Length: 403
Ligand code: PMP
Image (tube, rainbow, N blue to C red; front, top):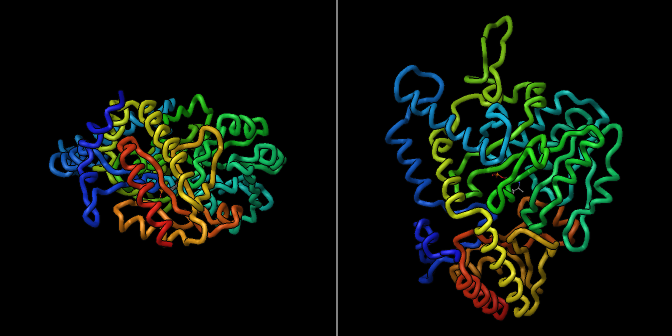
């Protein structure tokens, strides 16, 4: 039995009221709420071991460093990477992808090709466009089928002798589509091309195994998986990371600095310039503990139960169109109400205590492909309930009758 009430009790923010009603928080695709254990770990970091990492011989600094390196080892285990050298802490998925785009592309030349898909978040489009403009690279884009699944034949057809990298999301943040990333990586490898997976929307619902996937790069953000904000992870295959130049220069990433020439630190520090959010990083194992104790598969089963129930109930509301119906999709629902602007729907839902996201969801090329400007989007987390879905449906019905 999945005990959702005891899970909810661990999230103080869920006790909020909005406009005199208990809050329904369905904006989990953008970010999840945070369990008390993570905030307690952050508090303990600030009050107990607030000293800069890697720079001190004193006790506090060594404690802070130990917390950070323990977190790195926890992440390594979580995603089954071979070595902690392959775990780079960043500010988030966005910075992780920018790191690869800047550093990996440094070895490319005009006419080299990068493959993306039309369902990518801007974070997995714009970094490549910046490099394409700088170096004269060509970006090729695979489209989608009517149900929001990837057009795999088109994806396969895009590879050429000039392809240098393929980058695609594990899970779409709009459609909920779960891409067959292991097959896509294998396809890239069959052409001798490495693959980057944007795992931002996968990690709240599954535990990626980078070795089973055979991923070359895998990027994700902790704030979407019950963890602290401002922290991300780039997993990179050691042989690739070793060949890549540093992304940013500064403290921590050097071996020796002189005006005659500077040498760089070993992995992973080569890619970690400056003081990181070491308190947040030290607290991230608590988020993984929360997910492990709750059970990632049990959480996903509960979220899919909510997804199926909510999808069925939305059919009762006149004028609803749902975008993304691929089999096995993630617990994300993007929709529009006929004749209503998504902003108006979102605003009226908010006034009834229901928090959903509206807009293009940083996926304007996908919006263009769907022929729309935006959607209303909701996503489920482990702490959501059937009762909340019922309250959302009642609020949506009222909204539809008002618009
Ligand atoms: N990729 C996808 C698929 C996302 O959903 C998001 C967050 N909306 C990002 C990348 C960017 O994540 P962050 O803002 O945490 O860097």
